[in-house]
Image (cartoon, rainbow, N blue to C red; front, side, top):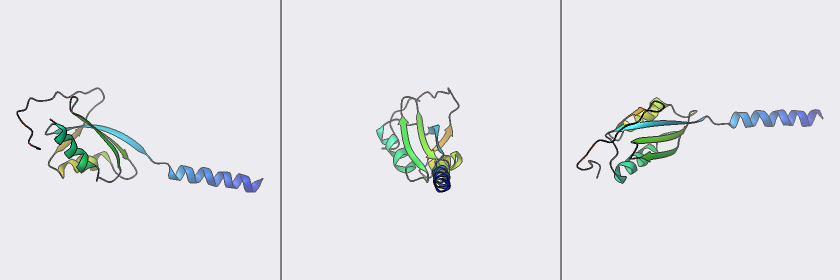
Length: 109
């Protein structure tokens, strides 16, 4: 019985140690996304940032939703990652919306 109990305790401890702290942050970018090329530029560059698990973009809402492992990176590090490909980003507050600006052409083509 003691052996089973100690194995159970060790298993619970091992599972809790392996649990990851997966979080999500929603940002908007400057310059804004205007087309599929803009989306791809963001996705293709951010995917190399440490801890990034998933990236979703939305041109209409001007948002980039990043799912990341908080044990490997921080929001600040993710925001700095945008600077590597000449973008800037800021975290959107709950319920905040961003209007797409008019544009004549995409500078990312």
